[in-house]
Length: 361
Image (cartoon, rainbow, N blue to C red; front, side):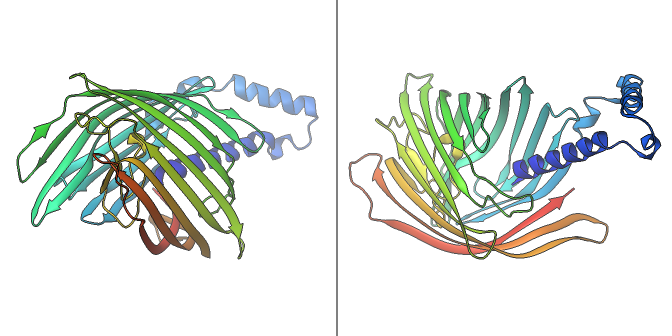
């Protein structure tokens, strides 16, 4: 995804910069260490600080098409990403047309590094649920402002990250039966993540390791509606044969003690790619938000197989092909109704596809 591309590109820039500073050029080859050090210090001292301009350094560095083809929903658009020269600030911008709402939607996120903390800000307008009755449609659109402050605690091969989250959201409904509106609501809570997943520089995805995440939110609206919502996630990745292939096993458990239907995101809405920020687990093979529940359990098993290392461009077109792979998945889950205590039967879906790592921009 775009955030991974930004991280990889930033690491490449840092590696090149470190190599350039660490190895003096031919002009210093016959000088002593003291002379070399003095020469480098002189270059740094005489450097013109006016050469760095914050705004000009934020020009987009990577871009990619954004395409989503899901059951009864299509999204087509583009994504941009960039970061400043000092590695303090980065951003990602998505803009696309959504067939469910039949209008443009989008998402802007920024990340600011402040000492050892990370401040993330976001603004979005996205379809959060939709349903078709014959040729008629009903959809819900969520507009949200968010802020998250995290403090990573890195170890040798793992990292623990606590995060405090605050969000303001307003959900409205539309479609062929008219419009309706929910009262604005506030959401605050926190996340705790442990991650030791590892990958090689040109891996298609992570190849081994474990990720554990616990999340909780308190939802309160201006018309005195309130609810708690919790989501747990565990991901185990096992390396398999052939080399660089892997098996990803992922589980989600979501729980709402008491659903308040005056809050659009109080029920658990599982389906499609899910909605991570709203604590709604995915369920591939089904539309976004298809299963409304107060308890949900989802298991995803995915095998990833590398096929080829391309590492070539296409003429002068800004596209560089890296790794090509295949994947096959199975998703299964059970859901307890949001209005009753009845559980569904075991629901499942399976599929396969292509994985392609590229550099665009």
